[in-house]
Image (tube, rainbow, N blue to C red):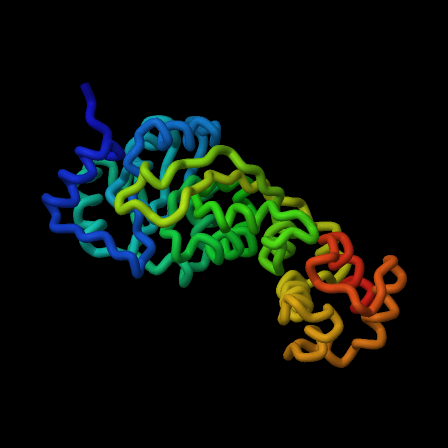
Length: 289
């Protein structure tokens, strides 16, 4: 019977053989439940034409199960010892079905990587420490990647799918949901990871939105995000007060912001968490006409 890398015994054996100690500073938590690993790939509905991006490939727990089902996988890993183990385990496939990039995932250009390798989908168990910014970065930079299936901490997932007025609703919610629609796939117990984290994890599906119509109207994503960040600068303060203390160019347009808020049925005392994504889009567009 085949022993998968994602089984607890096999993972422990590989870590011991290569003298690998997982680093909390890098947010390294290995999934040691093969059923969950297979379930992630099942949700992603992979096929023989898919070119997958996997960030945080580690020792290949996910890569192993992906490999027979897809055309190619581009793996990103920063840790030297993990890369040594990965290269040994997958030496027959390296340079063929596996492209391995040793780098800090947050310092890469995903426009270039996705274009060069024709990546169409992300399936990843990234380090917890980079998961939140990584999702935004890939969605901003790699327009040809339409689907992401990512295992993240439950609290990040709750921010992604938070509703207006919810305690988890934040600038991150607004920015993420501008770029994609997010759905819970399933939850994974903290007991399925080594070392065991302090929280449970959730696999989320991100489906890229088509914002081309907005872009054609001189809608600049980066500037829109600056505006949203300014509105949420001080969560407990009124939106107008937060914006006034931001370093954005909108801190000088407060009277116009107040006027535009009234046009969408909000008064000057509204807080940032009380506005929907569509409200932010409407305000931004009118501020830039």
